[in-house]
Image (cartoon, rainbow, N blue to C red; front, side, top):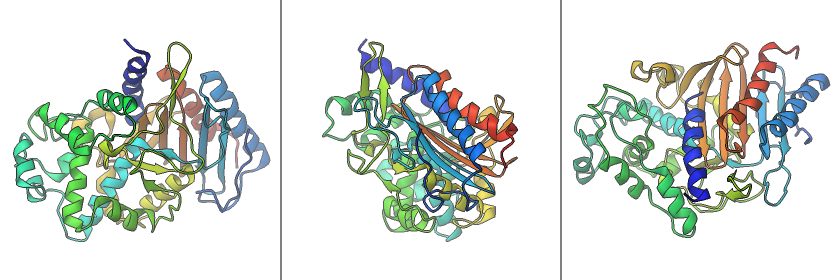
Length: 388
């Protein structure tokens, strides 16, 4: 087995954990995405930076960027290297591919269209999809939009390893979302709609096609106009090329031979609506706050989003939004996770603390436990620390 395949197989394991969970100078408060307008006290700032610096060193992670927004202060920082290959230092608020956190944006777009009376969550998907596509979807005449959103449709996922390997071997030729979608549909159905839960990116690709039709504009335009702009997400965009412009965290993963592999410059068109957004920690916290405060959709629509389906059981998955308990820090966490080879995003809201935390790590160094080290240390400090 090649080193690339070993890396990709590990990525699938880590990404499943991330998606189901649920020293640099600090930037100015205007650049950060927090609630409180001030930076934290110096003692708190030093403690948090120490957690980041020692955490990535202990975990063997090249670098990380973070934004923490409490009711009193905002802290936006970085540690280590943006690229372990070039040695470029990580800087606060660098961009990165947010992977499956993109699903929350797609869900918000659908909720917005429902509020505009352009669709209903309980519409059968055949109402919004081309007839020839519906014929290819097992149970396509009975699956509802809601069942796509909460992953109870019975539609299988695509083979992400094979897609990324194909793109890595030929990085100038994108794998289309249609090809990825067809992979999942050929492996479907997994069960009758509404009877079980299986996390599938194909559900969210199909949702973008519904958004296209219901909104009358492409999904990309609708999300930009109705989410990015009103939330003030000036450093966020949908990735339609194979390059992230400007300073960014690379997506790098180390193989068994110790050499890092860079997955940053690949197309992600295959992940339309499921993992195709580039953002920053501060922008993601801006989005999270705007979402929870009713500035993007109504609070009743958000309540529908955050309610876990019974089928998802301990995954706590609602409509593109998750609720779970983190035993290591003794905290309830709400949000979503995102995993891409060499890039892992943890996007959390802590109800007990009314605090938002976005953390991106640019490698897991071949171990799922390493991701938990930095996150758990930060969360534990926020839970038990004497910060003000």
